Length: 616
Ligand code: G6P
Image (cartoon, rainbow, N blue to C red; front, side, top):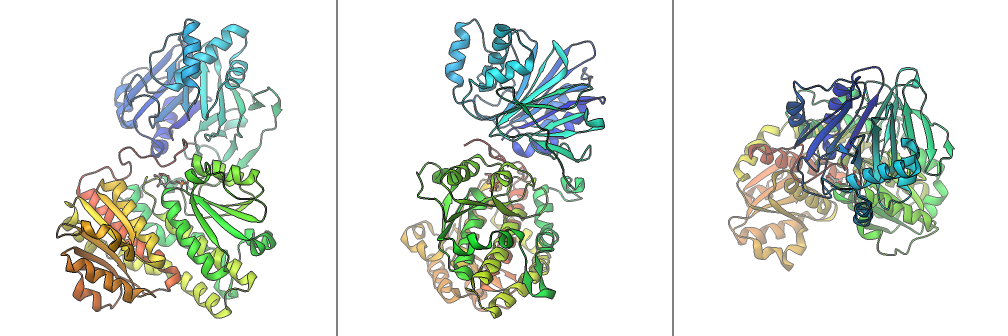
């Protein structure tokens, strides 16, 4: 988390930095700051607690001229989110300024050592420690900024993406990364540099991007081409990629919030996700990763899925789809648990990493460990060129476009769509899915975007329901089978953006504890679509009604039975059991959205959360 932007070129830096920070605000919004070096060699630093708009207010009317600068939006780790702890930080001499994303794990030890050498600290941050270490190194070894950064970073344990400016070298930015992402856009004549935590601040200026690898250090010097080295000063070739980022996707497009736009984007982006892969005319699903790795996939003794948050919920759906169509056992693990569990994993296993951002630190570490132990890594990622995508042996992008609202929506349905295509494609190669089921599911998958559009037409109806429930303090979400992960996801959506306590459960498990919570004040959202466990869920619903719980049920169109039991129902179009999460999750996304809006909360940037969790 935290977002970094830096610029060096012939344009004014400040507007580029501010625009970039707005695009990175999803990564954290505890505080923001800029440092721009003007033509007179003066460093002007502005900081503000909270969002980038506060920073703009603070800097308004002051000098922020200059063509070289760095900027930061923070998700606090070390130290409270106040102005002193906000980045950019300044070194003891006042010459060096730096922004940082990541955690320096040995910061406390380094801080003590630097104190003994006469350094003092203004903030509680690990960033200031690293900056003072760079200054100390520069003074001790009498070296330039890039060398000092390389030497200092060798003493550091932890994760970092940094950008540093030294007033004594006014035409240079030095940047480096380990575990936290960093991209460098190459503008005019390859001598204009846009540095950022992801490509979104770069989009619109250039499509030529270099993604740094771990422990690489770059020097961006005015009038020169990019120079990359390892921490040991060995030269590294510049590997520029052409990226294709649709700038319109980075705007709200007339919607009130990014989350709302992303919910409504789903029919279109799921068509993008399936385009060129699901080929109904040829009665085929073609995924290049399955073609290229056919043998490893069909002969795998088991699959393991690692992920966090919403991506973990998608993995629970993926497990059911793969077991259903491929008859390969699938384990689903929280990446944060997997990485420290000394997992039994090795050759013959395929480990799937599911991640919207492709930067989640726990997921990245989990696959690095699995890879070291000989497993094949299959990435299911949205952010093209991200760390997880690059660390994977193969994979399938979900291609749903940038997701900016912190609460994930279209990435979830995108992941589920890819998992359905994947399970069908592998199952067909393996011969574990019948031709009829394969063709029926393929044809049904193609209709899903239209079915989602029909649910989105119920927006007003769901908004009205949201008003009825917005004052509740607790919610239960219950589902079974394919709808069980949807119950978890519905509860997570509500929790994340409305701050209402919500729990998702497999409906039958309710009687083993959660039922004690049910009374007239407890809304219970049932996923009760017409699928194989429909009768069972009706019984669970009766049990709740008998205890006076208020039932809101998601049902299949035309259902008359649940209408008599539940207080409210929302109808969704019929689909196959295997694909039902793709329709049943949509009303839950809208319900959470409208409840949060009616409570006047910040839907896109809920408190304490960040979209890209690059710390463990
Ligand atoms: C954060 C986000 C969630 C997301 C999770 C995993 O917690 O707020 O929305 O599901 O990280 O992120 P990933 O990018 O790996 O899918």
